Length: 226
Ligand code: E4P
Image 1: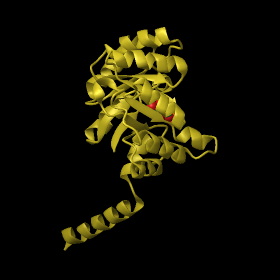
Image 2: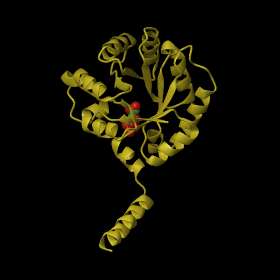
Image 3: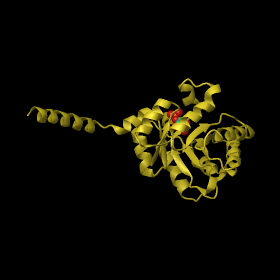
Image 4: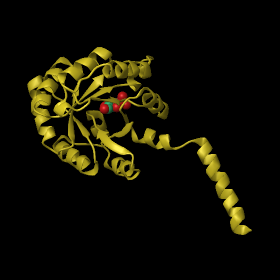
């Protein structure tokens, strides 16, 4: 499983990249607003992220019609070779994804919740599909179960003829809220998890690790004083 960071924060990206496990970044309008991002700086900011990350960086179109999304997508894709255009799973988004994929532009279809949506995205030519987990949990539904259905359904078929350059479509487990979500997504074989920085940090820690470290330190003190 590969890990993407779900953020627009450059410090978080730099820090996570230094840990050696960062394979990409996903952003969205909310994450950009959260860092106080301005419209006039959006493209420059995406370029800054792309320069920091050795892997795909999803930049989302906020347009609502296919022509506008296509225009947005072309502009975003021209910012850096590792930009992936993020497009919501809706009719206009599917049409734009199909057109952009035919031009060789990689698309991540986001706000995907169901198996039919995922298959439509795959057929349209999406390079990545992002089923959301946490938002299902937020409405007391089984986000992990929904993700598993998407993983099974997509892996039942060969979509390589639909994607840019015949690459294998990859599923990004999105809207991740906990390390346990990551465990479940890995066990079912989701290709990627896109993870908020605080969750990524929690993934490294365990109380038994802390306890073990504490006792090693105490014993080492004994060795030094012996
Ligand atoms: C990623 O691509 C999504 O935009 C993100 O994971 C959404 O997460 P949220 O439900 O925590 O906003």
